[in-house]
Image (cartoon, chains in turn red, brown):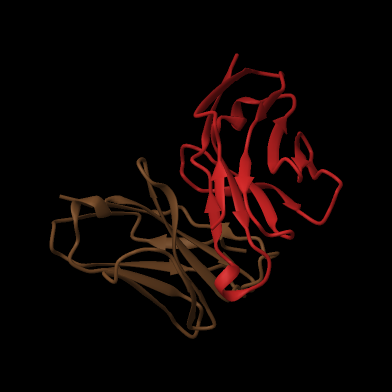
Amino acid sequence: AQTVTQSQPEMSVQEAETVTLSCTYDTSESDYYLFWYKQPPSRQMILVIRQEAYKQQNATENRFSVNFQKAAKSFSLKISDSQLGDAAMYFCAYRSPGAGTASKLTFGTGTRLQVTL
Amino acid sequence: KAGVTQTPRYLIKTRGQQVTLSCSPISGHRSVSWYQQTPGQGLQFLFEYFSETQRNKGNFPGRFSGRQFSNSRSEMNVSTLELGDSALYLCASSLGDGSYNEQFFGPGTRLTVL
């Protein structure tokens, strides 16, 4: 079974600064998908960024980028120019390829990000 | 386009009762997944439905069940409620059941068992 580990329960960053959230995972599969989800205090979970394991290029979405190290099974999220609206719980998640029985998301325990003025 | 909706948003029940939670996916989405979120266990997968068929089930007791209707709306039922069932129950929908499909989450139903 796959596992996802987020070793930072809480992180803090000043507005306009950069912060990196860590995630490691364990799998025996060679192809899979990795995600970062954001859950603001309102509780609606939204997708921040997605990475396909077969792609070597790191995914980028505006101020959000990932550092995907497949051999090390590491998938960190970098938030640049942090904004107050970035304050939330961030979850790293893993998903096996394919459909049906392989389709569930496995989540890490989350990192609570605080953004200070 | 309307997002994923879940009803009710809040629910208080007592031990031994049963409860039914509802999820309406985004229009056109055929896959619905359910997750339980608790402070102690985090986010755990309950089950996934695609075209009215359960495709995948997490490691939960048989008291947890679900179904999907022909319009893709889904319900989950928990019978003989226990204190430990208190949680935020999240529903997520996607176009298909392939892993490449993005899952869109609803706001959740907060269940409190007294």
